[in-house]
Amino acid sequence: MKRKDQIPPASGKLGVLIPGLGGAVSTTFVAGVELVRKGLAAPVGSLTQLGTIRLGKRFEHRTPQIKDFIPLAGLDDLVFGGWDIYEANGYEAAMYARVLNRDHLEPIKGFLSGITPMRGVFDRRFVRNLDGTFVKKGSNLRDHVEALKEDIREFKRVHGADRCVMIWCGSTEAFLEPADFHRSPESFLEALDRNESRISPSMLYALAALESDIPFINGAPNLTVDIPAMVLMAREKNIPIAGKDFTTGQTLMKTILAPGMKARMLGLEGWYSTNILGHRDGLVLDDKDSFRTKEESKLSVLEHILQPSLYPNLYKNYYHKVTINYYPPRGDNKEGWDCIDIFGWLGYPMQIKVDFQCRDSILAAPLILDLVLFTELAQRIGMGGIQEWLSFYFKSPMHKEGLYPEHDLFIQLMKLKNTLRYLKGEEQITHFGLDYYMDLEED
Ligand SMILES: NC(=O)c1ccc[n+]([C@@H]2O[C@H](COP(=O)([O-])OP(=O)(O)OC[C@H]3O[C@@H](n4cnc5c(N)ncnc54)[C@H](O)[C@@H]3O)[C@@H](O)[C@H]2O)c1
Image (cartoon, rainbow, N blue to C red; front, side):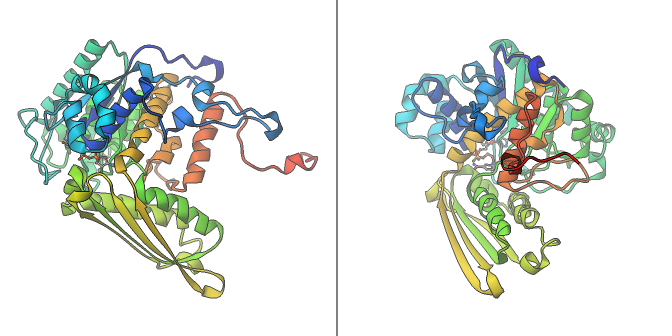
């Protein structure tokens, strides 16, 4: 791994390859990058574009911008491509998604219209509520992987992009249990060759990425790159992988509130979460198997933050329920309600109500940008395999077997920044602070 002064500069075009290119999140991300490049909007929500990093002791007053501290690809170097199962170009898809208004879309209509998807690899068994027509023919899984790899080669050639990152922004696929054939690259590839029915389209995209030496990030909760076979492949080839399921909306609120409650040793009786959501994502999640995938991801967050086994007096047996209801009029403007029953000193009950009237894709788009830039950095310096330091962005962060995932947003942020400090040879910041007040002698 290259560190400190050996980190190569980010030069040349960086291809961003997106399965689900025509979705609400993807179009909001692509349009947003172009608006920022043109100086027509600000990249609010993006740590790489707006965040700073404190270095050294507090009296040193060294707090550069992250993008000045570590060499990340610039926005002007990003080129976009990908796949969808509907043929709409970027402008048509963004109009359909109804996230950005005309004032934002008209000035970049030409740019967006030029972004056209490649035919997707699709299998309706995994996304029952969609019936895409713009799909690759045939059902041989290896052929599909080869066709995706050919798409990637063509994209790189057309755009002159030597480096690429692939990020899954496609629909949430039906719930899949890990299977025996997921355990090793050999068994997975054998299963592929016999067209095993439990290999999902997202796994084919991930395999095509890894076989093309391209990092893969999973923005949705489906089982994809988080199987041992893919993790081993990524490690062997030293390719970064990350996932899964962007932390936005209601779960973002959970990762902010729950650590605070635990820090104050307040107890939890129950946490009832419900959402109404329209657009295509809402429709997909209206299918019980796709919802199950999402539900698992959403439920795991509290358990890991609150650690009931360590704090049985506070968190044993709390009731946690998450529902999502498809409600077309709301489109992408999801409304998430949380009814939280807590208890304090001597067990006295209290309630917290949260009504987050959020915009799902507005919250997700900056995460895609950061993930693409940080993952490409990881690739450039030779830091392959699971990128646990990017847990900050995910509801179900990937982690090494034997470790538990870190869900506390503030610990996740510290982990991310300390990784950047480490890469640049700067001191880790632990927020210890006693050394400002006392001469601490080493034992
Ligand atoms: N918006 C958020 O805040 C958020 C947060 C976490 C996760 N996610 C996940 O991100 C994904 C995208 O969300 P969205 O709101 O943009 O949904 P969307 O329905 O608007 O977009 C998904 C796109 O994927 C396409 N697609 C489906 N299967 C495909 C395949 N096999 N190959 C290529 N394209 C395919 C669909 O046609 C659609 O255009 C979803 O899985 C969602 O659950 C979103």
